[in-house]
Amino acid sequence: MLDKRPRPRLVHGVTEEMPTNCGGIFVTTNGVRGEELEVFARCVHNDPCKSAMFEGLTRMISLSLRYGVPTEEVIDQLEGISCVQGFQWVDGERITSCVDAISLGIKRFVRSNGNGTVSGYEEEIIERKNRKKL
Image (tube, rainbow, N blue to C red; front, side):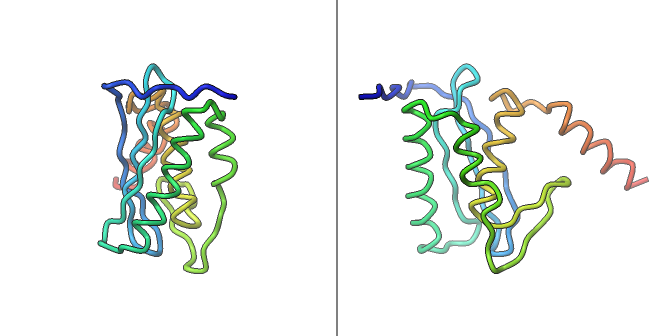
């Protein structure tokens, strides 16, 4: 049987608001020493049905991560799932559903090395946005 990593008392995380055509969601990814440990998602608007779905999905994501499923595998399983509502763009990345937005939140946490700092990729996006404003 696999060993479940215990949850430390103190973890660091990043919360990002993600636009979707169903309304925005907040995706929080927490980790310790650069290892993803848990994920949470909440609706911007109070929608009990979506909230329940997000809670169940993110509990399973968190459990998978704590049992050692590679983060890349979790992202691969969620990324690109689409919804009939269409898609949104955020910082040059296409969000095709709420589930896809959760995968993007996890991916961005990984890119930031788990500390929420801006990586080279995000710096490039910020620079492009600033050039458009000029």
